Length: 453
Ligand code: SF4
Image (tube, rainbow, N blue to C red):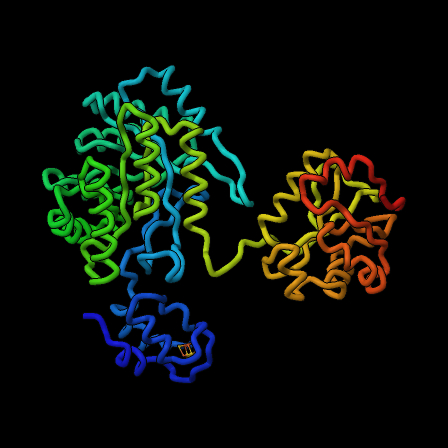
């Protein structure tokens, strides 16, 4: 039974130290009672109290893990219905689906594409995390063979899509490596749940539970947990996008608002069909609300691009601007002591835009990012998070003086007004660069450090 805020408060240290980010223990207790924070956020709570608080602090949506090693992904542990209330914590896994009815050549082609597909956006390497094999053939032997091919060809987390326990069992027995990769099995149903749960528990695999409606799901999950499966995902068994969206939303609401444990798990959807544009729309809808793994037929690059951008936008923390480290980054190869130095802020979007333009210029350069708490150049300048004193300190601490035979820094054109005071504060010569990052390639082509511009 959940504890009230006052009951939780009585078990906290009551020192109001503020280390949890709240001014008082009572404020923290209220948030904990509402499942908005984790008990781990208070570093001072005693072991005894921790045990008493366990039921109150258990996440309403369980944290589950799929995959192994560097490929492991964490899902769930969400605490809010709307991102602006706090943040969403664990972004959905994106994966592709293939049928075991394809021939080996077609499969190899798809697997190599899934393996190779990757790009970088705002410092994050984006790729498919999972690849699912559908047992369309109905033949356990062929299914096991294709799973074997998948394991040989890609490093992605395997998803075994079959409701036939014999096929899943064969995939494990014929492929020793499969259990080590900690796959996801899709799915246990009312008809096979005992056998699927036994397989998942034996191989420490995650198990998706597919219900014919939420009531059936809620009946199945306690039994599967009881059978020893730790990592459970939910699939409402709906086919139509609207029904799926409604069920996903209900699952999330029941878990967060009513603390209904049988539905307190992440969710998974398969997006299939003949129309790739419809698939994309469905997958995007489920990414918005409230899917934790989306597997899409074929997953072409043009589908993956908007989905991964959408995912990244939804799953960044709105309370914290995306930042990069404040330091001198080397962009390009073989930088020597004559390399140009461009100054900007540590706002991630600004840095990656500048870095991309420097790469385009093919002039190996240093980009010095000043710590402005993630503010862009003009915002930081107008809020005094970027001034001559702060910029001079960043130059001094960057170590660039030991690497270069010149003392010249290029500052963004928007803060040209700072050039005189920066020269005085730092002792460096200051060159005013272009206002927009897009002007950097042309600027660098005509620029020689030490000779001004
Ligand atoms: S960190 Fe713990 S002791 Fe400190 S204010 Fe928060 S709840 Fe109270």
